[in-house]
Length: 311
Image 1 (cartoon, one colour):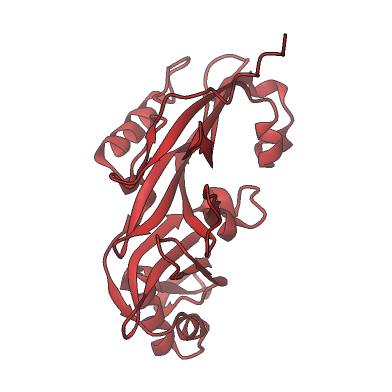
Image 2 (cartoon, helix red, strand yellow):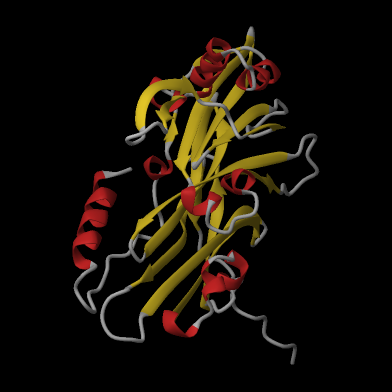
């Protein structure tokens, strides 16, 4: 997490008790460092054997697999508590056991080779690692971690596949292999504030590269002061498409201000219902730039504007 973001969080926490205070907003376009992605490399066995070892009952085998996935010792162990009187206390530690492990293969690069994506959920934490096929086995090229309690416990039915997912990349000519972008989400918040960052990634020259990242959800509700308590909700989606005949994409943004006192409580827990009142829809178009290996802003036909009727 960037120092600027941490500073914003501290300032917002300080402002919350002040009635009517204007709380800071995250910029629409974020950066890779906000998403918990690291780019250190490590040799891997086959992804299938790694996922098998993550389920091993042998703690030493499981710990080695967790390290290969990118976890530190601090992340790989959890405390063991006793509930004996007079009060519970920590009496030791043990290697964590994953709740869910998922292995997928997808072509994230420019050729026909498929990368391996191993994702794991344990409690409120989600981890993932991406590996390239190598001359001798596999090589991990990036890792990801997210303290995703807002997704796991906040109304997302399948949090693991929401936080770590694949998005098809349409090509202008028939491909030999279907290519994908890896989409990663991370989130955070505090009293009255919640945000979710989204990053899209492809593999270029054996490295996982960020091709676009942005704040996909931002909700700001001031719980202080007299009613009505006004909330600001921003939601963004990115989809790939041909933009004026050029491979690119569109970033769609919806905004709405509403009084939290006037909506059912269920709308805070079901994402589809929370998004329903969005309005003030706008679009930004991007083109794929092979030189920078990113989506770059591109002024083109506005997909948010309805076509004019024929005369």
